[in-house]
Figure 1 (cartoon, rainbow, N blue to C red):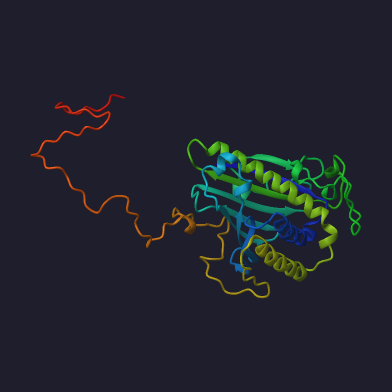
Figure 2: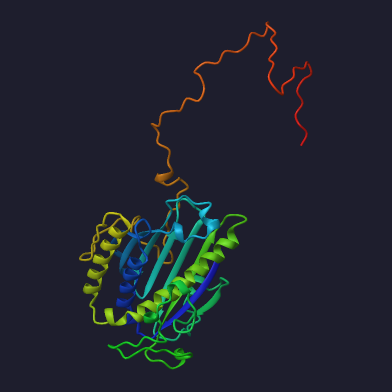
Length: 332
């Protein structure tokens, strides 16, 4: 298990980012999706949790085979996806990633948002007070991102918002900028497979860090697109974008409800107060299952006639010599 805490500051308030993070997630998922790969939305519904109150539950499938490194592609099936389950009780959220093909793999993320510059060192005391972890600050303006994801229009050093007047952030901006907020993310990566654990967990954390940096840069760079939206408007944008994304990758649109809070079975929707429990199945996914009614191929005759032991026969086959001595196993 590898545990890290990420702190990402934004030139926004926590109330403003409630709209921004929903808009960013939907638009980012749509941009990163293409036919056969991307983010399929399976479920998106409001629900009520006895501990956290009203929230939103989403379930997604992230198809990403081509984005895996070559050593990982060698051990996973061609059709490969990760299941994402998220419980959004903003300003507190829980997100889990699992894969039935890799039952010993999981990512667990707890997020809290506060109006400060990342100075709260005890924000996760209830969740991980005694757990050793590395604290990583992510600077949306100055940290480098992978070159293939760079866009000047999404660079906070160049972008300036017309609606808010914020932007063109410079080094050290977190010390003086107002308003300012911080996304605190406690990320636990587990891959309990001997020989691969350290390599995989370090790789996953690198991917998580890149995604957090890119996503938060985009949320700010797109601020003029979402700043005036109401919650109903961003939920409608979310619904329409998710439907378009599902069609883009070649799946049917999900049934998305945004108007009411149904009474849902606790085993399906509600999450425990500290961390949700997502069952991990050791069964192979459906696309790996062998059809039960598949006819058996015949590579040999139905019956085999053995030679009569009372009749001695000599088989003159190349490379084979008869001998009365018993066979001995070949020494290693």
